[in-house]
Image 1: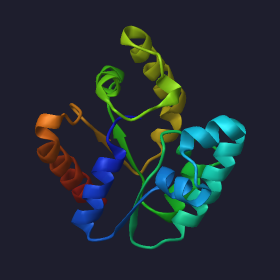
Image 2 (image 1 turned 135 degrees about the vertical axis):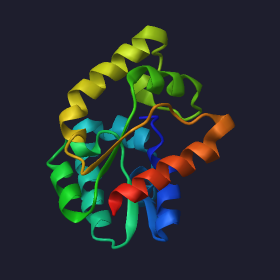
Image 3 (image 1 turned 90 degrees about the horizontal axis):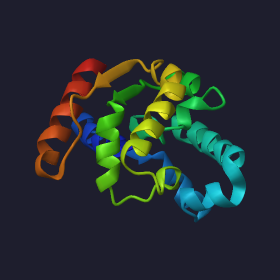
Length: 169
């Protein structure tokens, strides 16, 4: 969450001259509701089933970069499916960097709503600790030294996407 999966994914797809799918946007267009709405109305388990079904659909598309939600690889053997049907990339950043990014984000993320300062950093650290065993199953792990800021967004996104592209070969 907040690491730049969608932004980097779009740039990577452009560099590879292939399509791009944001799994959350795919779900939202199919169900005509936002992910937070689906989560609130149906609960996490039902949302994760919708997410898995959508991931299976998207995994059948050839020549596409897919950006998933941060929880996607952690449920129902999704990481195995992702590894079998494509090349998986984990963009890693430290909790402090992610917290700084989320504090200035305009995107509404109900899971971190109301968390600030050290509470936000601790929450992110705990989440990463729980999810790391799934994330580390990715075929390519890219550790960012810092996250994208508005001032250097194009340079940083270009650099990250280019470095990931090189690791895919």
